[in-house]
Length: 121
Image (tube, one colour):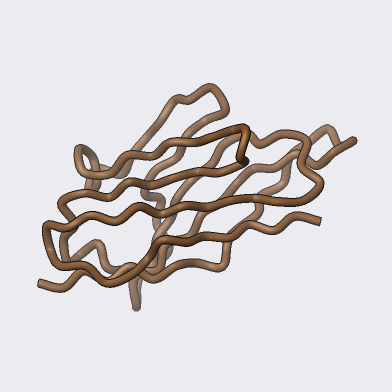
């Protein structure tokens, strides 16, 4: 019923930038919170940033001042602009959306398949 697809990952040198996108498609009524998570090898998945339906944002301390999350409600898309990238930012990045399907009252979490970000030193 709903597909969530990330794009924009890749290989970049330390200090560089990348912009991730995540778009949802399907029987969508509305989308509440949207978030980006990441998981490095051997580590647990961690929250990087999220944005509410009203536009309020929150960031992990490790990315504050370097990453910016934004959303385009008309496109059912969330973005993550990543600047001043560091080798420790290397991970698979996942987006998660709290999506309310058409004719439903409550949302459910939908995850994307992940996109690899590799930062070389």
